[in-house]
Image: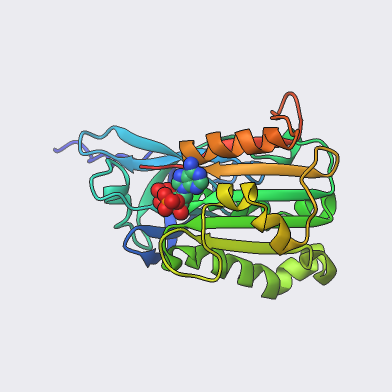
Length: 268
Ligand code: A2P
């Protein structure tokens, strides 16, 4: 008699529920949420696929959905020769991915001292943690004004953020959670650096030349009123850190809250 066949079960497997493609470089997807996973909006986890040799290939991904959501959402770049995303971009509904349920990260409310206004500065897929925080009721409870800047090379790369803002403003669940008045606190400032659009330029330049503040009718950024979270490329993070420090803001951490926090967006 043959021994019973053992089907290997994928450790930490989650099922893909939905996939949306935005451009040939960007897509988002939703997966089931492990019952045991608790996280703070803005944190990231390791997710990935099994390699042909049966070993997991994992990368850090910010959770783009808020902590109260029953499902998990992720927003990803597609890199044609990237070890993970060259394969991950082909996932479809019903497929399984691996998710290690150990959330971490610095882009959390606990890492900031109380303030009046919060800036979310994102480039590219760096918008993902803010997609979580912008759907988190605490963001609207803690601040009088919430500003999301999102800079991409091309106009079509802004689609995920545009849909997100529209969904937040028109979603009855969000109104129920935070109230219509609270949603009016949210300001969206998209810019492109290569395609022609209404707002052009790197956010660092728009901050340095005063255009961003002028457009928003804000006099200055100060450590008394302003808090910031930054998520983008290494270059953006370094440049923005310098600019925020120039305004007198100090970098915070979970263990030592201050005025701003920074995290590198997932890139490959
Ligand atoms: P740019 O087109 O001038 O390089 P990427 O797709 O390379 O991740 O870039 C996303 C966006 O971030 C692009 O609009 C890019 O502008 C911008 N960017 C890249 N590096 C920096 C930086 N050091 N400071 C400000 N913006 C940056």
